[in-house]
Image (cartoon, rainbow, N blue to C red; front, top):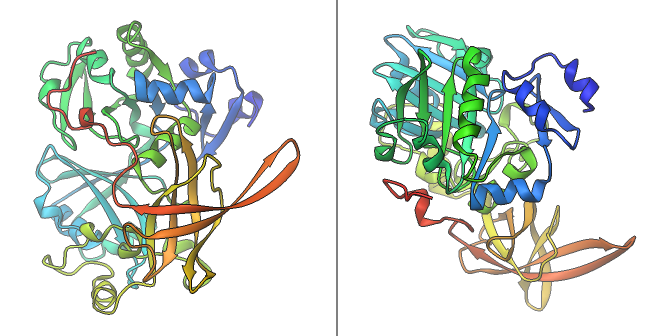
Length: 398
């Protein structure tokens, strides 16, 4: 999108006036009707802000549903695969929800704001599915996307910056916790969540206080390396964290046309999110069958030799001196902080066990010349980037 198209976009974030002042690249895309920046100044510098100081990403376009009513917990427990009864007020849960065939429709975060009051956040819109799932239940589902402004504040100096804003008690907030503060007479919610795999927070507030909060945040972060960041820098960091993304690492089940193109939680490495001890939930029968009989696909994290990212590459297994195609790469990058050539992919079982050695077919171009190589890849089981500061409570000062 050009800056002219941005100005004509259907929705603009309440943070847009401040972002427009920083924009030097004029690279934007549409995110559910909103203008969202790919980057502002330099993607590399924005990425290193996440890892060395603090990067700030505009989350306002994220879909947000307020779920309340006597049956709100029953509704959520029926909707998602994990047991929401274990998520107490003041906590946040990562969750997935499936169709009747046990195939993932989407993933997201569920905030237990107060007793019986929840906020579900996701990349995609799901009101029709949620309303259908709520038939017969006393529950209210309200799309509050436009009513809540939100920022992701991520990086090693994020706590020090927010602490300068007099958010007393923030040092006690643990991962996947949330708390509330006052900001200029309105409620500011802060959660210790994020999509970067680093120390970080997300803040949620009224749109009419968005610019004032942005100004206060950047004033507090003046000497802590704070920088606005776009989607490109966020994408680099989420790959290092080993996080999956809809339409990249999996296709939502409700948009697929051909069978076999969607994935179950087991096939996405999310078996820890499926709780068969709780009451019935969408897809339970199909998932129980899959657990008994085994999955077709397996998500893998790969450490690949060399430094040529394996974008959209095929994955092969060695078999009797021959190469057998067993899967493909969905996401790939060279990690500057890990000094590794990393990727996320999907392979057919029984291939892809931790420690397996696979081959990845890599094509790369230099000076208009295409080259091909077969690089060895090792299946790993941990995130590529997972610093201790991510979990430290209280976080260390910077």
